[in-house]
Length: 326
Image 1 (cartoon, helix red, strand yellow):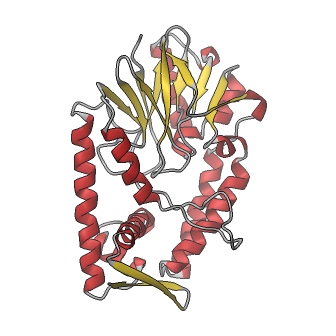
Image 2: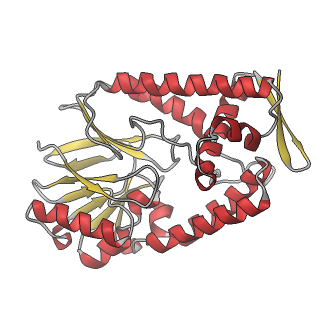
Image 3: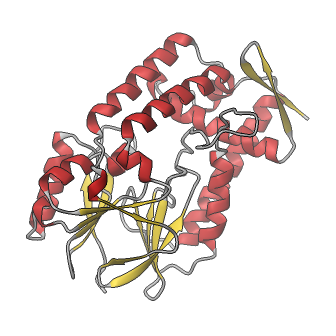
């Protein structure tokens, strides 16, 4: 089998570039595709050209998860190729019906950041920024999409890859593992930095007819345990180069950092910091105000872990979550 080729694509986000992984043999297949911006399109076309290909040569585009830097260029590629778009059950709606899913996420994010204690003016700035993402993300026509699930074997690079559902960073995320060569396309599951657990809602309403939040960071920690058990020879991540360190070393670093930050969060609650926004302002004081939503999402995750450990409690007072040490 052939190993995938890294195509590094620029993004407008603080994380920097995103990877599309290209298989050229026995047919051109692209795993993830970046967002619809002129510089991303130019970088993708240049990367394909270096391998003697154009967008029109692509036979399949596989999408790992429903985030703009991994799926946003899908509509453009559908217009400029005859490729099939392979999308998991978990990710289907994000690729096929983006407008509805993005509207749901924006509405739900507002309810969460309100409970986090964020000032309404900052919420409006955040919503304005989220609206802008819709301009660089296009849906793919459903008749071009092929659905897969965790029982599917994906044929890429002359091998058959297992599909692994990897929730935490995103509930929609899937990774791909080739058990013979032990190669792993890890999307945003395994990175050299701990990926942010995006704030998102459960798809179905609970028994009381209410929308519930997915506990992203606890889900991510569970997924780490699953990947720790795999034997892996090479990792092709969603951001950054192929791993040089063993994947278990990377996982241990992630768990260690998350554990230390969780303890810092606990200490701040013990010292009297009662709200997510108040804790975020201390833990992520070095973040620009416009980027603090990522720090806030991490703090939501740390409090979820601490509540899971029965170390802190949460109440709702005047519409804002209040935390106390148990």
